[in-house]
Length: 290
Image (cartoon, rainbow, N blue to C red; front, side, top):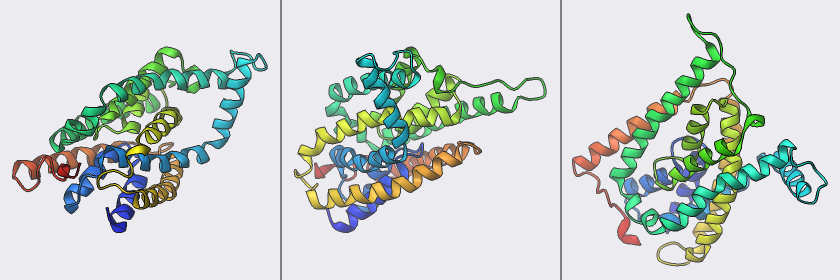
């Protein structure tokens, strides 16, 4: 991997990680369109450490408060009924599905799941799901001619069942094209949570999974076409860009709809199907690198 490739891929990772459009799909597609080797699941997992570091810094007050309350609840210094202490347990519970499936489906994640036809399918299908969830949330928030405004839930109402459902949604993002934030936010909206609450828990829930995945894949960074220097450089770029994106996104969702992302996902999926169908792009483009 050249330094130019690592810069562009790090930029793509930072721009797309927190938006509901799938960073892993865009890394895969960037390489395919440019005629580069597929950066691979290991590169993706490691560069996500950069964007997840941005989450740690952006949500540092929330994370510090949750950790303090969670550890305090273990020794009896903080009541177990405390909201922040419960959030600590709910993040752990919600991380179980992706931990189990990530290990079980490792070979599929690094192979068949990276087929461009599957990515096109997940882009479109999850785009439709996100659009439906967003319209449902908008209907509750604005009401209508024959409907009253319906109050949506916040994170204080999060329970174990909802935490597990969030976790299952997050695990779906093991397939490139699904999008970690897109799947968990969609799940949250469908369960009746506000856009801001769904996004906030989505980002907090991603921390253990992404850091664990990145640490697990570190051993592969020096193998094949992925080398330490470019990978670390891409991770730094992803961190800087990712921090700016998350700050913008959290402000955006308080007043705006997710529909622009829905249209983008569906259009990209259709274009990808057309290119593969016409033979302009191989569904396995770049995979020989591994």
